[in-house]
Length: 432
Length: 141
Image (cartoon, rainbow over all chains, first blue to last red; front, side, top):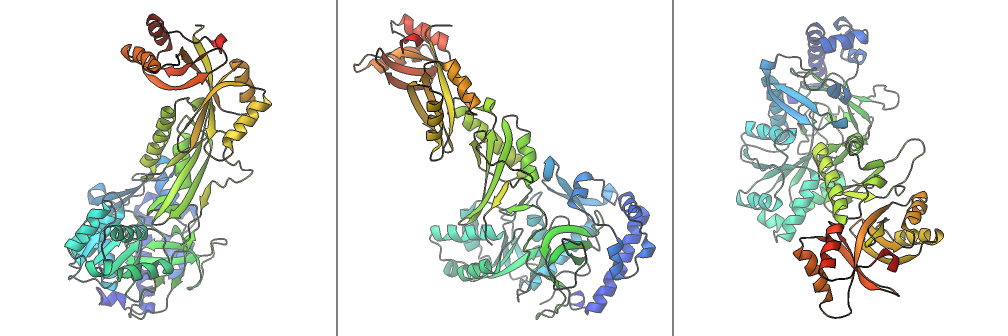
């Protein structure tokens, strides 16, 4: 089944010609009408006249997460406020969040991409999908919600949390699909066992749409054996719109909507653009975005792209699994966390000393992050209650900035390792 | 200073094997003799509370060794070796609306009693004295 067979089966040369025309139009438009992009192109000494072939995109400057922070909240928006119909936000580093805006067309293309994706994943209007991604500022919940509604599936907007109720609803409403993070699915499987649910007997689940954090083929094998459902990888971040691109039923990596996004893979060391099939850093150009265009945006994900047609008949390039990051971002239970955010938060608390360590591990179901913090001698109190209050205060500050609960351990000065040269404050022992 | 107020050292101890031994070793190296002590613990750290000969000197020596130490004022109430004596002392404080934060018993050569940290030491001393209870003087320990 295909949602948009014309685009999804378009021959590769036609796809590239379509992308070339869209790119030219986009660059011309931004150069002429937007200060931010105009100045960027001027600085890089490139004008729309230089963009003729698809490869000419390499003349354009990159965009970085930092651009979103520097221009927070609205300096990168390219449309009039009256045309913006939605915002999503993510917590940023250094206490500064990032904000993404959408016009009606932006939401429409996001929804269109998801309609294609969910259809490719095997969902139809007969399915009931439980959306257990967070609804709200996070793009996951609302994004999938509208995508699933567009194909006529029945949506259960469960959002996150309350695992027991999630499992009860899944049985009562005979949900045939769930969208959530891989770590939440692990948690659901464990909880179901504890509740005495026989997953294969009591559930009707046949698809799991999993994303927002890295996972692996071995996790897929485990999930599929436990649930009897096919597990589908989904990719997309708020800079692109949100979760957007799913694997098809052959599970060979997410199919990209080529009319919406153009991908390049760079050698992370030399910056050189690599041929399809090579692993490197993903750079995305959104071809149709209106409110907040993204040109050569560095995703910081390490992956590869293939242009080989898929067994399902789709012709657009596909992504491989994300195998790492080219920056220090951590993904904890589906939430992006930058060590710099943690540092910023800690250093604003007067009782906290200079040294801290971030320990990340996987305990059974879930990612576990513990932050060890040295406190200043003068912050030490003879009363355990005071110390526990200090710890609780640090934990609540972290929760406020990171949107994730992180246990804190207080340490005496001198207790944590010191570093000569570059500090290695993150210890991540997770294996995917 | 009120002769009934006793200076206690509170020392931060990490909750890991060998941490207390490290602190104790430093106490030995600094030739600090403990008259009484108590250990309080939470999940990741503990507090060693100690009464020593020369608190001011001990604090200086320990700080030089990078040990986190704080001076705390506590009081000691003499407790008779008979049933009900703890009730007597604690009831006086309770009646006077004084909160006991923590406490530990002590038996020495000259005196035995209960060391307690209260939210208002001066008021506690007054209440205990009025009730006819005897307080431990720093010089007696």
